[in-house]
Image (cartoon, rainbow, N blue to C red):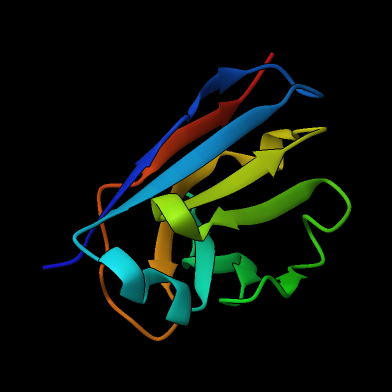
Length: 115
């Protein structure tokens, strides 16, 4: 069964950077066929999709993070990353990775941006 484990979150000051990692277990060579995304959910708000990447590397971003976040993937190791720069308090949320149109939700990783 596919398992997705997010890591790399933490407490960071405004303007700082974090790199989130998502490890996809038990996918082997099929990982590369799935478009992947990073989602986030802040308290009291709906979960939102912030970045996507196709199997061959095409990316898209929500307007709120465009120019600050970069999604990437390493198919050989079944990894997805989210580089987050110029972080703002509004970025505070639990961040999740998932395949697009799938429900393989893990526990997520908490990102808190505060001075």
